[in-house]
Image 1 (cartoon, helix red, strand yellow):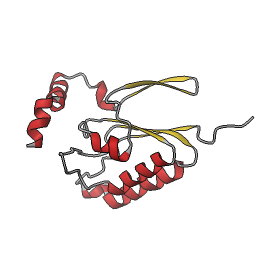
Image 2 (image 1 turned 120 degrees about the vertical axis):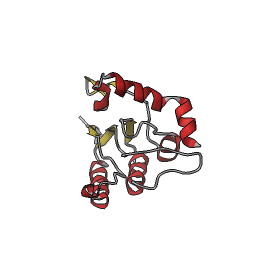
Image 3 (image 1 turned 180 degrees about the horizontal axis):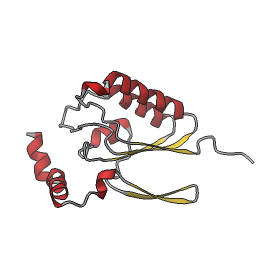
Length: 154
């Protein structure tokens, strides 16, 4: 019986690439994430990123943020090697966009996911989805609105 060498499912969240807090040591953090991504390349079937890969992400029509570039390059390489990478938005990177899907290859389903792997059902989401307070829900509704996004682009 042969087994699929790419059978492992990995999860990460809350990397907060680009966080301006110097205590996070961006260079060390990015190197750690790149090292992790390289380590899973040979046996990963899927990598799920469960929100807040970036501390802030917004794609303008012709400009993208520069922080986290080494991680994006490594994610691209991982995808090219045959690993599926699915990225859910968190409360810090709700504006994930077409550059990440068309150029890097991330799958961006947009919200909580109900999936099945290895005969197990999983429900995946970022932790902020559990917040039920009105202020948070209202602010998230505003930030996701097409009008808000268009105004921010200006």
